[in-house]
Length: 221
Image 1 (cartoon, rainbow, N blue to C red):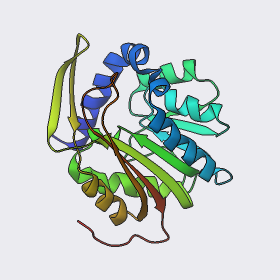
Image 2 (image 1 turned 180 degrees about the horizontal axis):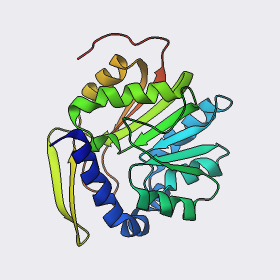
Image 3 (image 1 turned 45 degrees about the vertical axis):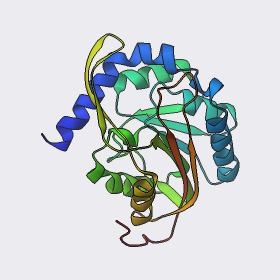
Image 4 (image 1 turned 30 degrees about the vertical axis):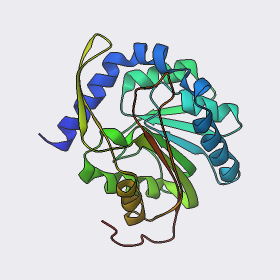
């Protein structure tokens, strides 16, 4: 199976669950104080650097939250159905359909970016390329906040909330993700881990705050 085939499966799966995803997940930041604090820190530090991209934005709730805090936010998602909902529900933000490996954005367009639980759908071999693509669209000293499920292995879903899907969720070690970020030209500034909130799936969560450097730092794999 090719990379394009795998991404197409993810796209179809999220198109299938888009409406229910919005109903179930669209208000999740209300019960995630740590996530809100990290996002607020990003917005404060990115002030004056340029727009903030929400990569893998889903139904747009994070981009909408960012816009509500004064940021010019641009959400990008693989799923056209998710983007349709995001545009309807969060008119203060801009939304585009696009792939993490081929972002529909100009070089240096953004001052900061957020990727919360979107890199978990990539193959491990795609992580560095995805972070290199994020680096491309960030301005010098631009910031990136990445969130993911901690651990190892893959969880496959063939059924999601009663809908037939075909999607993998990958668990990642925090040092592995940090290494790929450094390889791609980022300096990791902060590492945070937490347990799940009661409303979430029972997985540990990891967050990395990173800054775009002038040049990639070389291999750390």
